[in-house]
Structure formats: C-alpha cells, structure tokens
Amino acid sequence: MHAHEVQHYASPVLVKNRQYLATLTSERLIIEGGSSDREFRISSILSARPCDLGNHEPGLMLVISTPSGQKEMIWGFPVGDVFKTGEQGAWIEHIGEVIGDKPFAVPGDGRAAPARSAEPVREINVRPPTGVPENIARPEFIAGESVIIETAGVRVKQTFYTLYLTNVRLIMQNNTGKIGREFAIAELRDAAEFVSEGGEPSIAISVGFQSGAKQMVLSFPKESARDAWMRELRAVLPVRMPLISAAPEQATAACAGNFVPDAGERLLVSTEGVRIKRTFVTLHLTGTRFVIEGKTGILGEFAISTLKRANRLAGEVGEPGIALLIGGRDGEKEMHLLFPSMPDREQWIGKLGEFLPEEQTPVYMPETKQYTVTTVTPPSLRNTQDKYCHACGARNHVDAENCALCGTPFGGGLVPSDEHSGRSARREKRGRPEKRAKSPYNGGVIGFVTRPSDAFSYYMRETPRDAVGMFLLSGALWAVISVLLIAYVVPVVLKLSLENFPLFLSLQSNLLLLVFFVLILYVIWLVCVMMRAVITGIVARVCEPEVKFSEIMAIVMRSSLSYAVIGWIPIIGMFAASIWSAVVTWKGLVVGQNMRAGQAAVSALLGLVLIYVLLFAAGSI
Image 1 (tube, helix red, strand yellow):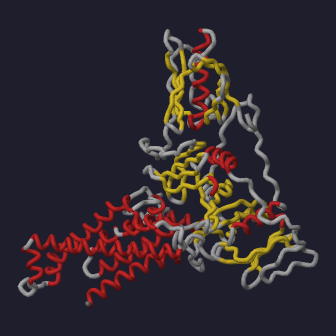
Image 2 (tube, rainbow, N blue to C red; image 1 turned 90 degrees about the vertical axis):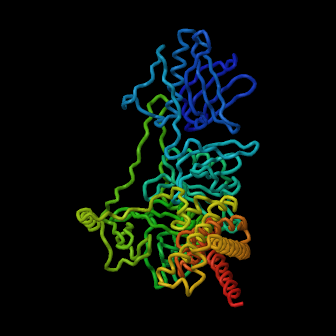
C-alpha cells in the first residue's frame, strides 16, 4: 500500500477452490496468491451479497464492473465451520462501509451495524447517483482501455455529466447517454483543486489545443469525489516542465507600464493586459509589495506579508487566472486576476509561491482509530461587506464599481446586503416573488431557441443525422401554419373580397392546390436553410480550420427551430425567425466549435445575408 492508504480488512479466501489473501483498503481490493495478483478499485465494486455454496456453507458473491461488462466472483472461506459465518458478515460489513453512501460512518449515528451471527445478512448494493437514469449505457471503450475512475453528477457550467477517466482519455457523458466532450490524456496539461464561490468542491483542468490552452471547471457533488479525482489526475498528468529556459535569471525583470521601483527594490515580474473584473491593468511584483497599475496611475498596492494564498482558476470563457487571497484589518478578501496567456499565469504562480506561506499538510489518523467525515458548509450569503446589483441581483463586493455578473454600474442604484434583505422581506409581504437564479438545463428541445449556449453545450458534437428529425419537423410546421394563415386568416383580418382576389378563393376551395402550395414553400425553405448551412460551414472553416463541417451543418439545422416558433407570423415573422436563427447559430459555433465570438458572428450572419441577396435577386428577375 502507498502513503495515506488505509487497510480495512484482510483474510484468506477461496476462489475456484484456490486459496488467496484478500485485502480491502480505502482505495483497492487486492487479491494476492497463485501465479498472478489481481486488484480492483473500490469504485468498480457494485455490490456484495451473501450466497450459499452448498451444504449450507456460507459464501460471498461480489459483482465487479470491468471494461468488458459486469462480472461475478464467488468467495469461500478456508476457516473452521464455526467461523465461516463470521467471515462472511465481516466482509459484507467492511465492503458496505467502503462503497456505501457514508464510507466512514461512526457507530451509534442511528444505523445499526450488521450482525456477525448466523442470522441472515441483509444485501448491500450500491445505489446509482441521484439524477442519473439507471438505463443510461456506459460509453463504448476501445480495445485495451480500462476505466480508472468514474463519477456521476459533475457539473460543467449549467450541465451535469458523468465523467470517466480511463488510461486513454477523459470522457464527459450527459444524462441522455451521449458523449458531450472527450479529451486524450496527452491533451491534459494541469489540474488544480479549489472551492467555488457557492461552496462546491471543484477542479480546474487545463486542456491544450492547437489554438492555445483552455481551462474547464468541474464541480463535484462531494469533496471526497473531488479528492479522488485529483489523486488520479496527478498520476496521469505529465511532469510539469519549467516555463522558463535554463538560462540564468536576470537580476531584474523588464518593467511594463509606467511603474518605477523604489531605490533598492527588486522587480520580480511585471505583466500587462491582466483583467480584474472588467478593467485591464498592469501587475507588478517586487520583493516587498504587489502593485496594481491602471491607465491613470497606481490603483492599489499591497505588502507581501498581506498575501495569504494563490490558487489557479478559470475565467468565464476559459481564461487562465489566479484567485489571490489578501488579508487586511477588515478581514480577508479574494481578488481574481485573469491573465492573457498560460505562461504568464504560471510565472506569477511560481513567483508568488516564493512568498506565500505553505499550506499545512493534512494529518492522517492511525489505522486503529475511527474515521469520520467532516462536512464543509459554504459561507452564509448574508455579509455586511457585500452589496447587490439592482439590475440582476448578483452579490458584489462593497467597493466594486460595476456588477461582476452583468456589468451594470452601481452609481446610486447599489443595494447593500442589509437593504437587500429588507427589500426581499417587503417583496414577500407584497406577494412578489424574489428573482431566482437560472436553473440547470435539463435537455429540453425548446432550449435551442431560448438557451442556445446551454443546449449546444448539452447536445455537443452532434451530426446532421441527430438533428434531421427536428429540422424537417420545424420546416413542415412553418409551411403548414403559414399557408393556413395566408389562405384563411389574412383575408378575414384585411377584409378582402374573395372575388377580387382569386388566389385566396382557389386556396380555400381546392385542397390539392393548398397542399401543393405547402410543398412549394417547404422545398424553398429546405433549399435556403441548407444553402445557408453550407455557406456558414465554408466561412467557419476559413476562419477556424479546426472546426468540423458536419457539426456546423447540425448546428444550423438545430437553429431552424425558430421558424416553427415565430416564422409563421405574417410579414415580420419570416425575417425575425431568420435573424433569431442566425443568432442561435452564432451561439452554437462559439460553444460547440470553440470559435471566437467575432469569427462565429461573421460565419452565422454572412450566410444569412447571402441567402437574402439571392432571394431578392431571384424575385427581381
């Protein structure tokens, strides 16, 4: 066993009439003896239940998950008949404690320990994670690929996934069973653990692409799951290479901006283009202080002794950042620094690490003592040092000039925490509901027009085959409703005489002509949308060669749902639906293809403009 691994139970067992030594630890089940040793991770043990080996001899049946499917292992116990039942109960009890919901439950907390007598022992099974359907199949693994660790209910942005870490790749599977994203082990650059503002245990993973490194934040349901993932990630991540060459370091770093160190003060690092909230500043770190320089001068400076902790974090769109904890007379405050590149962030982490106090190493209790699980409660939202935005209700620091969520300037509209609490009470008294946070996206199809960023993040990496059903249905609904409105509603609203307008009279009296008109509109719609998809894909490939043409086709086909929602409205509906569709395509390219916002906007809107030019040209001819 390695350091910090705790042994729970060990005894000889019989497997197919051969004797082995089985050892259960906090991380593995080890079976030693014979020609080869075997070991299984705790997460792969699905259940442990008693069984009868014949002649009323007690045994144990283990159900273990392997890359090739679930397998059963039958154990016997090479001890006296008097002790067989005790061995059976002891193994079921210890396996249940390790794989259960409370792996280190303290006796006497309301749960009775299983009896070790000859009474029947209850079956112990692992329950599936909450919120994950039981019928969702696991991803298809390639030959030689084995699962190292898997966890359900991990949140990335507003979507929940089941994560699988194998010896080949990192897989993100959503609740519909589709693989949202996957990354090769070689693409994983770095990982850092932290606690989010909402108190969730999280990991920031840096992923390397040809266009540059990006970060992804994973929020885990439990701290123990986060810690287990960090252990496995550290084992597969490459050894961190120094970002600076082996050349001797200069005595003083090049100073950016107008900052001038004092006499005898050595400048360690200086970086331009760092973003704090919505302001771009220049940061300087010397041997005695940390300085923030703005366009008009020094915005703030802090002594080195006030810096408490520096953790890696990811910005809203994946920028590499640092959460810097600064202490003062009013308490500790956290400042988020977003850097223009990953090497700049790593250089600052290295320099800050020379001054920051080392974190205390966790102390592990001896194996003979009882273990307990400590529950970490997130800090209370009520804080007199906070103020709330009058536009979106987001919580901000009392010294902030703009809202960190929506960017609204506070001015005279700031709402301190105490005033916000009183206003909430008055709203409840008048019966007005308090504004609630956006709920996580659950996979609804209507989200492609109401929440495109969440929808395309949820249904990521789709092909035209996945989107063709909704695409054809959207066009059919648009064509049918539009023709019915033209034939029956427009003459009534405009009070037109059918004798003066034979077209409306023909559509109302001839069902075959009505159906033919629907088909004509449907075919024109199909041709225009597919031409726009092709143009969008070509422009996107020119802007970003790494995008996939087939996935862009699926994004444009998904965005056509707006025609079924508002496209049938007379006169303005067609134009509004097409613009809405282009905006949805823009959001889908940013989320689904990792394109920049400007490139995605050009690709989405240029295709729409060219289609309208062709339609007007054909109409004039």
